[in-house]
Length: 471
View 1 (cartoon, rainbow, N blue to C red):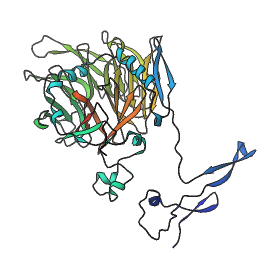
View 2: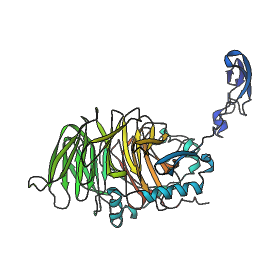
View 3: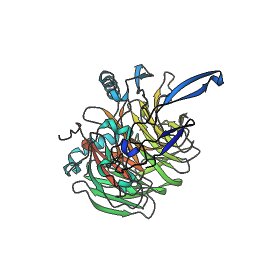
View 4: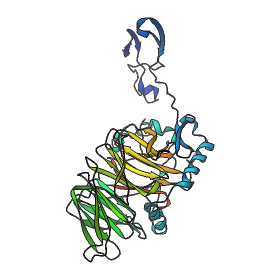
């Protein structure tokens, strides 16, 4: 038998069998070493060669300790960072509870929150059989989805070092999948007072799903890519190229609203105003009208971004409009005058998503960061905390669970959705998909709707209590 050797610092040492370390080597004899690797001491030059020192290295990597950081209110508008304990010890209950409670008291409910409360009794997917998949949350940061399992050809089974599950975390469970779209899902919405779920896709269709049966009740082919989809009251708004389609689901009426140029990539509603961000960087604003031919009147075009507007949100102090763009900037607009009040330049790549949480603005970007913005004493928005993620971020959303804790959903370019507890950014679980998740929508009773690049809409559930595995 020939043993495999490795050269380290001009010394030859045997290489330890990876499968033996994981208890899965079935070769006898094996050309690799079936024992712990020796510790090799090497001499290196320090301080430009003026001094010599020794350092030890092993083939097994040691775990590096990481300090969790939380941003809290100190007084007034000031924000500071406070180090907490290591992730393995979990964050201090006293500090976390205090911060969550403090911020939640100041948080305001948006229209999407009202949708959740109104639709609670009519959402039904809750009655669908729940497929529970649990995993210890302590392993979340070190596990990845097995790419061979995804394709159905992993030969290691239960002994595989990677995950064989679409979920990670002790409070996540699968409910059902909604299959029908053929391309990327770009919008998901639950209109108030209905038992219907609407989804739009770049395959050119809007699908209406029955929440009681999880079946597709209707398909509308618009003949063009659906780039955004939202609802407000009885209205469904669909962003296409150069136009916005407006449907009233109560009386069946429909209208077409023209925009300056390009695809409508983002929409939101605030202060009785529909706002649509387009590919040319212009944000169009419509208000209600008494005219017979259309209930919407174009009242302003907001100019300022040099590239496409890809995300919009309304909230935080004074009900301002926030817009994120491919020009890497965030602009803050006054919805009474439609004037740009300030420009935020904290990101180094496309700003992909914006949400308001209490008096804080959260922004994500392809630069792999989530930034928390807070108003300073000078009434300007400053970065209070920046959270780094391994991959570019494409979408954000948030929900408040039964324990009054805020859970942030963060979709990344590695086809995962990370769940963070705010304000500590402690990771609570992950959802996995075959392709990027571009749409995330919260529902009643802890339901989570996600749409990915394959056209699949997945319904998941965030449970009130952690699931306990049977002995």
